[in-house]
Image 1 (cartoon, helix red, strand yellow):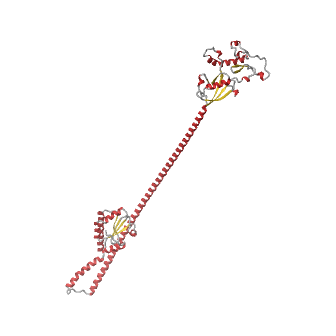
Image 2 (cartoon, helix red, strand yellow):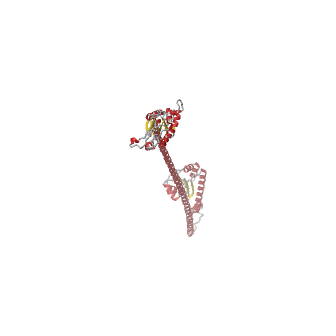
Image 3 (cartoon, one colour):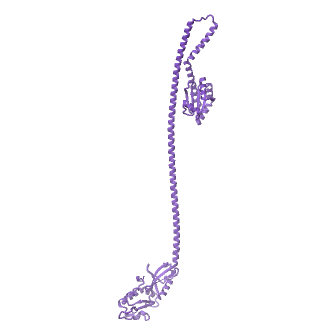
Length: 458
């Protein structure tokens, strides 16, 4: 397309001088402008504009020239094409992109309307009406002047003056009439232009309002999207912090649990070691028949026979060992077992009971020792009752007892209470290495330790 290279005022003057259509093309930096540029460069469009002598100028949307142009003709859409007539009123305004065929149709309609406007203005102009007649009269008069000069007769001067005055008056009337019509037409054009301008301004204002509303809506949507994004980020941060806190808490709890387990295992190991160390030695306390007690430590791997030998050696006679709770009397079979297997480690309390003589059983009887061991407590209780009731008097059947035992010897009789503590000491009898009181009438306090379980020795 052959665009006008000068300024907008020069293009307007040229279009008015040549009485052609003034085309203003506003373009921008968008896809529609690119497509419209291709339409303007089409051969049919270029030939149509050149054949009709159109003055076309191309203006960028962001230029100062576009700003000046938009003060008169508001630019609403980019790209836009303004087809302006000779009188300055826009004949047609196209907005956006149009195809080749549609744009050619618009261009042809504009050129047709422009030609109609020129024809109407020439018919209403007085110069257009009078000049052709004058020229025709000149062309018709000159030949007659030269062909028939002798036959023409000039009218009288007054008549010519009157005719000239009439023509002048007629021209004046026609001029006034033409001027009035021209003013009316200009007023109509001005009103139409003002109306078009008002319409364009309202359209532009409405479009600006729509754009502002759309912009506000977009801004609100963007703000809402940003708020939602921030909320989501806050929620994710909270979840991450909570997960990190839970993880740290679980790790701390796991570390504490592992530490506790390690400490518990260490304590358990130490306890087991201490327990094992304690179980290595058995501290045995033996309560003797005379009410005293003796304690000693033995390796837990020793047999019960070691403790039995120790007690027998200390007492001076054979004894039977037993426990209070749980009640258990150790037999000859238990003597070969260890202290640990008999649950006597790390400490235990044993009661030593003197073993009865086997004289009650017949020689050679294998069960006599066991029978004497079972009857020993009963015989001991019977002797105590007998001493308490009969005051230690000798029994009628004492001759049946063996002569070598100290029990068969008669006890001395006392008629009165002794005067000194040495003399007050009661007589006793001996069963092996165990001495027993025989007279409890003199002093009951001294016989209070007869039972090994008595609390007075504590």
